[in-house]
Amino acid sequence: MKCTRGGSFSKGEMQRFGNIELSPSAGVLNYGQGLFEGLKAYRTEDDSILLFRPEENALRMRMGAERMCMPAPSVEQFVEAVKATVLANKRWVPPQGKGALYIRPLLMGSGAVLGLAPAPEYTFLIYAAPVGNYFKEGVAPINLIIEHELHRATPGGTGGVKTIGNYAAVLKAQSVAKAKGYTDVLYLDCVHKKYLEEVSSCNIFVVKGNTISTPAIKGTILPGITRKSMIDVARSQGFLVEERQVAVDELLDADEVFCTGTAVVVSPVGSITYKGERITYGNGGVGAVSQQLYDQLTSLQMGLTEDKMNWTVQLN
Ligand code: PMP
Image (cartoon, rainbow, N blue to C red; front, side, top):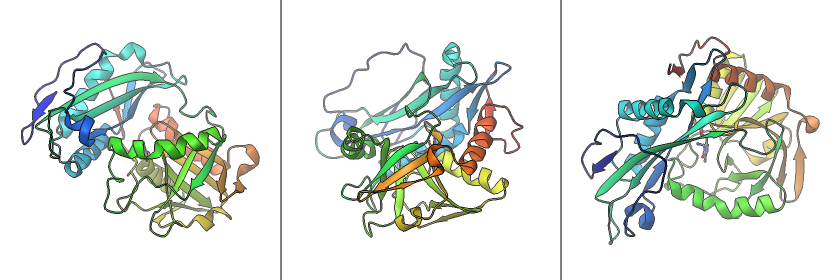
């Protein structure tokens, strides 16, 4: 789907996956005018296909587009395009329990622009691919390292929207961490360097007794849709959930830590290394709270329990 600056998106069409043509001076290539989303389609036991809260992705893309000076498809256009893409790729949705079809909507400044300015033309496209577990650990605990030199987002920057540049910012720390054997990086705020922000591609939750804390959304972390859903799921399970500043010291006496995201779903954290000290959780296994919340959320997403929240959208 295409759109000029200040206009609205035309109706899209289905095309085979392949390369696209871009001007070397496209806004996205030169000035990072790009946003993406990620969502998953799951196959149910009776062979229907479910999407999870796609209108939330549409709204987040619209919020990001505003920050990045881009026009965005309407919520309805976005959701209809996602549905059409999944239906056209139905056979690629794995059987239940074997993964999901990952859907990647992309919005970019595709028009040519030389001086620094928003591009004159925009392209919205969606591609999809079947996926299994995001981390090689599967649902086994992951090992994080806290980064205190490099940051992924600054106050007033673009950390709170899903723009492509945020991911370029994490590549260095992430590849160094991976080379040292860690699964991923946990970032701290760049002002005080003591409050938790998020992991490269997921949000973080800290469990202590019946209380679950997660960093509040203040513009430097991505408002995850899994995070938002997890807060409701955990409250429905009787936990007290706090959205607030979570200090790095709180990791020392936490019972469990887990991450949430579309790709990672709910990933228990087995250890966090901070300034050379390794804090471990759950004796190498999955903590009881992480397991309970993983089961609750995934059974909802896969249509195994009644969807009282009305979060899933059935496609066929
Ligand atoms: N933080 C970052 C930086 C991410 O890339 C993601 C993945 N979209 C998340 C958090 C989790 O967001 P969601 O639950 O919407 O996938």
